[in-house]
Amino acid sequence: MTFGMKKRTNLTVPIGAGNTTIEDLIAIACDGARVRLNPNEEWRENIREGARCVERLWRSDKAVYGVNTGYGESCERPVPHELVEELPIALVRFHGCGLGRILEPDETLAVLVARLVSLARGNSGVSLELLERLSDLINYQILPQIPAEGSVGASGDLTPLSYIAAVIAGERSVWHEGRVKPASQAFPEHGLEPLRLRPKEALAIMNGTSVMTGLACLAFRKAEYILRLGSRITSFSVIGLDGNREHYDPRIFIMKPHPGQAEVAGWIRSDVSPGSVRSDTPRSRFQEPYSLRCAPHVLGVLADALTWIRGMIEIEINSSNDNPLLDTETGTILHGGNFYGGHIAFAMDALKTAVANIADLLDRQVILLLNQKTSRGLPENLTGCSPERLPINHGFKAVGIGTSAWAAEALKGTMPASV
Image (cartoon, rainbow, N blue to C red):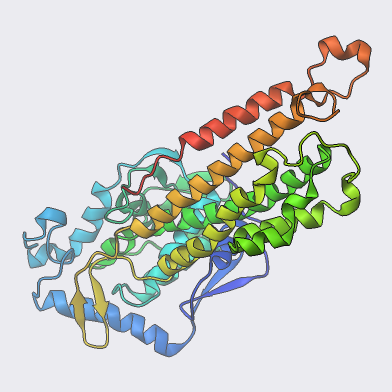
């Protein structure tokens, strides 16, 4: 694990004053930016009115799912008036059964930010105090110990998000200032006290898509890096193999105008300048192997996919994705299914497939470089050693085996999870 305090920047990201981007979330989760709730009084009053509306409804004995009813198939079971205020913490406690590794700090922060942004839309009926406490967890880096396993995503990320709700209530453990400690111990260090979760607040925290969405933001950032890295490695391979620069001629990509492959071809063309390969080299083949010639087409799939994947992720970040939801203008409770994580799951299935194809592409390029039959005069296995030491020097042979193994792992992981 790499648990530790994030290095602070001077950047502060506003919450509740407009849409939050993937880059905003990354700045907080990975670069140590802080959050600041919208100081606008109209926005704050809308949040307060949402909490008051929920209280009016349950005190009037109007049936509201998860507020004065049971959960799931128990929704037709009414909760006695005197037990309504105990229901939130009961929900939190019976979901404390997560398994697997504990999320890393950047992952936990991404989840916290995604949940804060969603609840700050003002449609979930939570109190301003709850939003402030979520902000405190982020800004003081009081990070709930969230197990990675236990969610199916079809009804939100109930079990992992219960660890956030529990910490807000002063229960379970957090990572804070270099060690694991009880939440109840970390709070006083910053002058904070646990909150008593109000009716609907535990459900509002838990019945949403913020774990998958926060992790999707981190995956998106890594995929952007892999795209540029894959392009640069391809350029190195073309130069090292004295490849044919004509494969990246812009006219080819006008004739099949997928924007992503044209963009990648431009990157490679820029890297592989006319002087970096020898145009006068005798060629037994005027067409390079697929892993060089078709690199823009493989990498371009990811480049184009990132455009619509960004749209799906950012809609999800800035959505109200719990149930039930509240129309504060009319005081109406809306029962629906915004907790369903289908869009994020589908987007991540597409992302991992595009990334796995790049892993396979780069593995093929490594084989071209290492194999004397295809490496065009490069030393076998790129040893670079003197002839007398060649019998005992195998250079990058094991690296080639490793890249094939890692590519196989990536391809194996493409089994869709959104079905």
